[in-house]
Length: 318
Ligand code: CP
Image 1 (cartoon, rainbow, N blue to C red):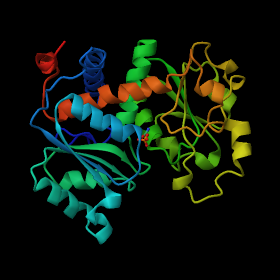
Image 2 (image 1 turned 180 degrees about the vertical axis):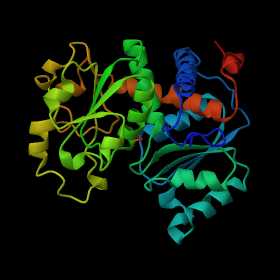
Image 3 (image 1 turned 135 degrees about the vertical axis):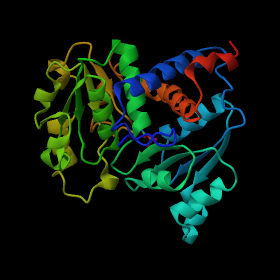
């Protein structure tokens, strides 16, 4: 089953290489527009989007909002903490009430895996998944792939090591689906307790040895330790995690000399990445990932609105 419903984007699982390429090519066009002195293209003027966030976010929320503003959309920001959800209103009732105000699309982050998929079955506007539980975070994976494509020119044939808390990571899941569909070889690495329960069904190699994962890697992608999604006891101590899986300059010696360092944020500095690796001026592209979040989210919303990439520049002010 495709993860695309009503032109929205629920996940990358099931998307074809040509569908992902179309989004990335569209995002690349927006990326060039964002470099212009006037970085706006009012192609979504008159279109209204509600950003429905039931979980905290910095990068995703701000970049969706900026993407919507850059395209001239009307924006409604919804925070669960100050809404009638606190009075017991259900997700479906909340969404139906918002849609009664003639909203054209919903961007949604929720702590429950499958929440946007549930909503997509009951409403007829595009839903864009901004992260659902430990399931998927498709726009994060798209901005990751755009960044790799810009820096290394391709995804096909690259060796990508994803290191850390794979089990609780929606980013890892979307990256695995997206990157392997685009022809990359993905290796997952972390303590056995932080590996997914049915990891053997994923299209990725699994190793518990960091040296093995990093050997000859083109991209080293560190994940955040998600303490908020753990029941506790999944590894003995942070100190032991850092010793075995923390990425330092020394551990990177086995990777390709020009390998990229990536992280979705927020970083637990000194845990997943040492400070000098996180800030490595030559290899770390962590802030490029954040920058690309705007172009990717512009592309996803633009396509969700049924617009054609050929029309992007018609509204641009160069
Ligand atoms: N990468 C990411 O999703 O970050 P936020 O939780 O800050 O949005």
